[in-house]
Image (cartoon, rainbow, N blue to C red; front, side, top):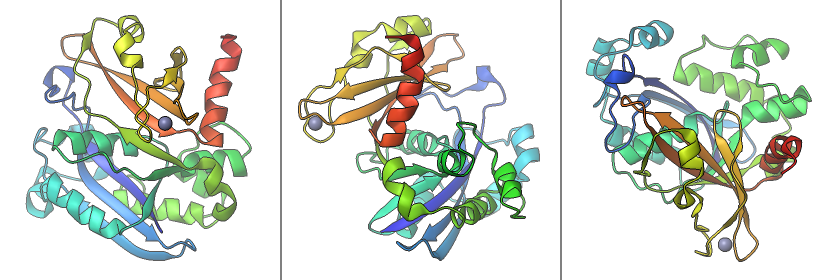
Length: 289
Ligand SMILES: [Zn+2]
C-alpha cells in the first residue's frame, strides 16, 4: 500500500459572472498536481509534478498567478490536458494507495475535475487529512493550522509555499513527525462521489428541505441510508446516514452559488471514521437535536 501525499493549484474564474456552470459549476480548474509517494513504512519513494493546460479558464487569474508564480505561458508550454495528467497521476499512485492531504479541500476539487472530464469516480481511495491529525494529535486542538505554521511549530524550514510539489514535500516533513501507524485507523475514511446533482435551488434552505438530497444509497450494500437532518458544518452541511447493514457514513453537502444567484448542491460521502464521528458530534451536540 502506498500513501500519496498530494497538493494541487487551481485556476478560478475572473469573477462569478465568468463561472462555467455546465456540466457542473467549475469553482476551480486544476493547473498543477504535485505529489510525494510513501511506501507502507512511510518512507519517501517517489515524487511527481504535473502542469495541466486549462480547458475552461484559459487565462490565469491575476491573484492565482501572483500566488503560485504560474503564468499562461508555463501552462501552454509545459501543460498537458487533464485526462492525460490524471492518467499519469494514477500510474504514479500504484495499485493500492491512500491519499494524504493538508486539509480536505484538495480531494473534492480533484473529484470535481474528474467529473468535469467524464473520468470514472467509482473507485476513490481512503483519505487522510494530515492537517487534522497534526492539529488533534500534536496540538490537541481543533484549530486548522496553515502548513507553514505547522512547519514552524516543528522547527522545520520547508520549501517555498504555494507550489504543489513543495507543499506536498512540506506535508511529508510534517508526516515524519507523526506516529502515523498509531493514527491512521482513526482518521482514514474512504470517499465516495456520485454524478453531479443537477437541481438548482433559490437558496440553501430550499436545498436542505429537498427530500431528494437526503436520498443516499450505501456504496457497499446498495441499501438506502437512514439519514439524520442536515446540520451546518465547516463551510458545508453534514448528515450521518446508516445503511440497512448498519454501516455509517458522513455525508457532506456543499452549496455553490451560480452567476444567476441560484445554487447547486454537491454531495460527497465518507465512510464514518472515529475522527469524522467526533467532528459530526461536536457540531450536533450543541444543537440538541
Ligand atoms: Zn450498506
